[in-house]
Image (cartoon, rainbow, N blue to C red; front, side, top):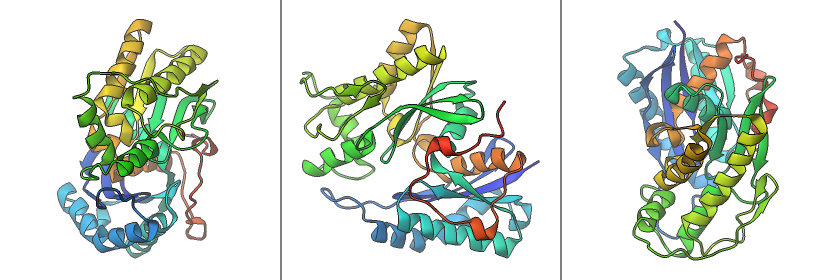
Length: 313
């Protein structure tokens, strides 16, 4: 058996999860929440993470019923993400790895989402729609890489939703996207807004007075194009925005029309969490990946397709 602990803290969530051979043993998490109308600044977010990370680490071990000696590898988010929070979490992960005498492994945040989604849903080889506060990508696996077929050319869909929430002072608790979703459920009139799909890419920067339908329709369109190109019959939605039930419903309609299957997870695993880093780390560690201490830096820009996926056929 292989047991991996994962540290995630690339944005306003700090989470530590433990995975043992595909089983989630623990996955505690904390969220830095700011007042309505405000975003979260890197320095303030890092300060929040520093204040709670050791408590979350203790919870993760206690919930899993494990001791440091039971851990085989320490995984952490290398990037992409916000610089100060990434550094905070990487520093703790490096320290823990040295204190416990365990191998260290830097994980791509985006691949953490994908591998967690594959584990939970048991999707085989899906076309992946990765939607979050910092990323919007349509991805498919080919020849040891997660290839990006389309992406945003400006801001991510989650950032678009967050900006809109700040403009009209929607609460950040539990998250702007969740509160927008609840408000949208009460709507009855569709308002036509700019619909910007450029080939396989999308643009959200000009849409700040929007409702979900337009943005999600753009995402469904580019996902369907990627499916057609790959001959795929599966869609997996990952990332924080992926828990949106309306997005899942719209994607489900498209999949049904194509005779395809839709896979998605709930907020336990869609939203940033430590278990997803542990799961990706588990896959990487078992395939021979290890990060030497001198290479255990972080990077705010770390594309999904930069990682060689040695653990898949």
